[in-house]
Length: 335
Image (cartoon, rainbow, N blue to C red; front, side):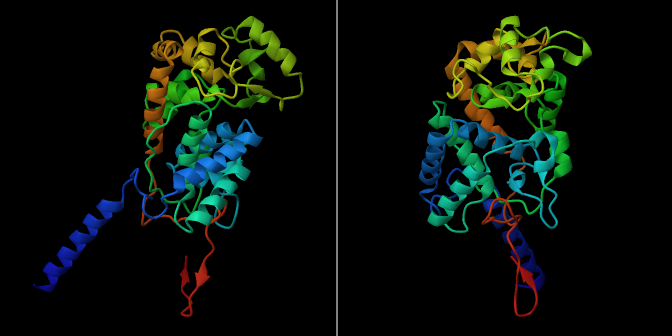
């Protein structure tokens, strides 16, 4: 066989091989880390025993990761040489849970060294957080690699804000490749967790400069929030779902129907006149099984957003930092 034909065949084989592994798979770690799910579940369970907000913290990390450059673990990177952290973007202000992620990573590394990406740990942790608090399970697609850089500008521009209108929220979800059903469904993760008063206090008295409370906010609920959020103390934390704040269920949607959505961005899903999201909210409020089924699918949809795949990226040993480089005897820097 001539050299040109050999070269062409080699190139074709290379393309085929890249195509064979450059995709996510639910069985990606079956051989390299068979106990992965159990290790993550046990660590998340331990975290929940000491912190009822642990699940909400972990799913928020996954959400904020996927909305900036896809699910690549970039949200976890702190400022360092060559990296301008996404954590300094307003949408990530006050984000918590690093200690939990560190614990999960430590446990995974002990079981399967240098094998599982931080991006995949976030994806699995999000599911286990939901399952362990009473929610649905779904098949997590795996095989992501960790980014070696962050996107501060992307975090500033792409992350949905609690102060946004439905049109603004739709635009950000659509830009990411997600539709209105995904928007309403993924917002349902607010069925557990807390929000600081600073993110909704503007609705209580002088909403958008009107001199009056947000008209879509139930007056009795508003009165309770005024007491819970004294003027000048924006750091008090209020349950996003007052009825069952630590359980993953469909109560969030019942709150929206009764105008008790805590954040403006939540209530917009139901109170925007003529919006297609109203029917979806009503459907989920009346049928938890329907919500659970769609939540799993929407999490898969989000998890598939532009995943970073081999040979790009790396498997970080410390989720907060890019792997250090070493130098060979020839002076060539390698990872």
